[in-house]
Structures are given as C-alpha cells and as structure tokens.
Amino acid sequence: MERVRDVDGGMERLMTPKQKMIFLCVDEYWKRFGYGPSIDDIMRLTGDRGRGNVNRVLKKLCVLGVCKRVPNTARSVRPVYINFRKIE
Image (tube, rainbow, N blue to C red; front, side):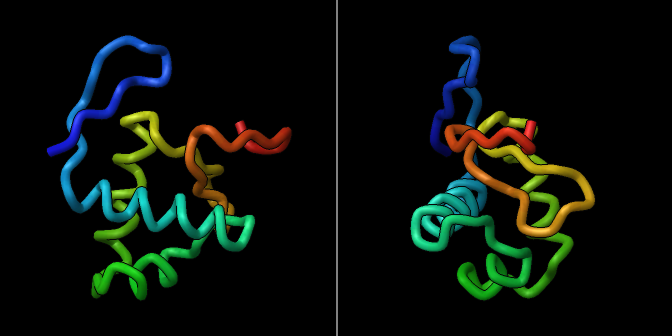
C-alpha cells in the first residue's frame, strides 16, 4: 500500500495497488486528452470486467481526496490538482 497525504496536509492514508492503478489511469488520461475517462475507458485500460468495481474504487479515491467528480455527470472524474470553475 502506498501512503497518500491528505489535501489539507493533515493525515496520511493508504492507497491500495488497485486504487493507485486507477488513479494513474485517470491522471494519464487527463494529461493526454484533457478530459476525464469514462468507466468503460478505465475498464479497458486496467483490464477490469465490472463497471461496479471501477465505480467503487473511483468513489473511494474521492473519499481519500486524490480525485474529484461531479455526481451524475459523465467523464467528470479528475485528479484533485486540476481546477475548473464548474467542478467543485
């Protein structure tokens, strides 16, 4: 497990290898295309078979504070360091 420092500079939390792999997919996708990947894109990149599994990991990454997303909006997941006016 890899340690992740909280955005506020407070606690450190552990990130599993699966969470790290999905976070790196989201990060690289943003760097390459300029928008977030869909769940199907992440499934294709990681070799996962279930949308629910990927969605669960994305929710956990948002709880850890390394990603943000807008609920009920497609391709809105992004690393926390990318700022836009519409995305909180």
